[in-house]
Image 1 (cartoon, rainbow, N blue to C red):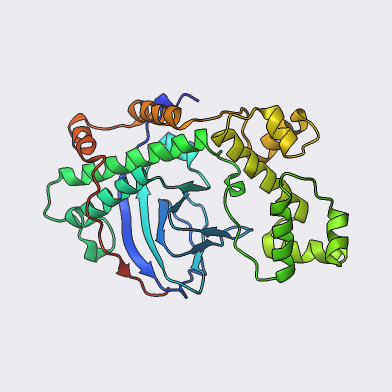
Image 2: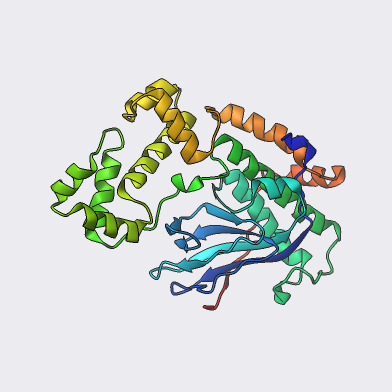
Length: 328
């Protein structure tokens, strides 16, 4: 589909909160709603328990939940988490196509500046005491449009990242699963990570650990949500993605270094696990050029507002101070 036919558009902001969640925070019931939801983690650890395996978010990570996607989040029980949570409405076909389901992103310094800009404008545009962005302040009516345009720029960049770094179907390969407290499972993970460039035999692994195959299979599946060999293969595919993005290695070289039977088999597994139909090595300069081109093609901006956005684009505005949230 030609992305230029479907500009990224945010219709309205529903809620935007910047607060500190206590270490015992848990939103156990979970929720799903008509709005999209963006969560950015500034400090601490945040666990997404929406699906198996649980995913641990680290500072600088962001997650976007699509419309009607059921999600559930908790803190790790050891430290508080400072988060930005934003919900918004959009009928944009581009967002429905690219941001359905659940997507994780590593937020770049440039994108964090955009979030800082939005946070600095938030109390000027909306009455933050109302908790919902349906009560306007006495500020200029153009400030709301500036806020929305910042968001549209941010989502354009996120969608571009989906094309150049990850894919829409299986981003969990890039994310680190929540650590297990089972010492045997931790030992298995250590062995698997150390063996990414080798070839691990499951029978031999169980023999080396001194446990039966059925016992290892059961405790690993319960703790990690994957079989041992599926987890091992995901590690290899994650490393393959890193090599494709950060090095000049070709497919044959990557397949060989990761001990796949053949480049053809590697390509088949890679496509099945990631949904990617072609391989692209994206260098930093070309990524910036591609992102800018996509931004100019896709953003449904208003010229006057865009001038304002461009003027402040590389300026870090003062960030708001997080409020303290109560445990729900």
